Length: 294
Picture 1 (cartoon, rainbow, N blue to C red):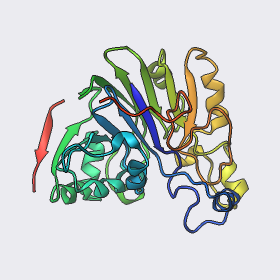
Picture 2: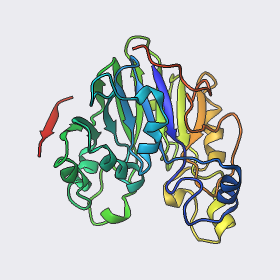
Picture 3: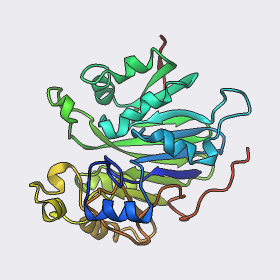
Picture 4: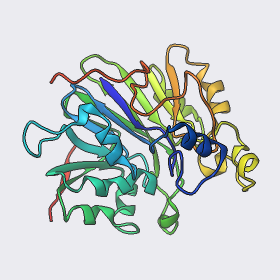
């Protein structure tokens, strides 16, 4: 299984266009940046899927050699997108994929409903490409030998969807290579470390965790704005590290860093890397779906 981090920042990226916090000032001065939360995964190096589609997904794709188009004029290794939430930070990039000849979008019924009603990005996208809307059930099989399991971990609705009912709003995904048995868990929006989540990740080779905030009171301490990390739907890294220590055979790393979070170190991922080796990947060698057409 191949994994590539396209973006490792929370909404707004780093530097955020209208922010003069310490992290953003340093990023501008150093010429460094983080794109927003998106990961690409493949079982065979030929068929690739995105987990989330951030607003700057085009930049992430162009920076990823494995996603280079060809050999045909419109051939692309990108097959589809798996959405873990309905947040703008995870879905606006779908519009940047409108030039695709065909695109699969996997999401829960709750998320698909939001994206066809309160924020109708999916019917809009279907006017531009051959769009397949796929149910992200407990287990779906992807081209290239991958299987994806899903767990609901949160109930936080996007601001635009507060009138919609409760449901499967926030998901963690477990991606397994059916050939090798290796697996990794993607949980970059994690409000609590529940027993169900602990069971879900047990035995995984790697877990990409929510690194939005380092501590519970980071946002208030940095900006003066009210609100704890968990009240915003994000378990702080300080708490997650305590839970992770119970799984010594699994490697845990953090992504989705907010621009208030200055964390660095071996367990913090960077854009463009394989999250488990910390290096760029080598060049590649080579569910029932509802079809929506214009």
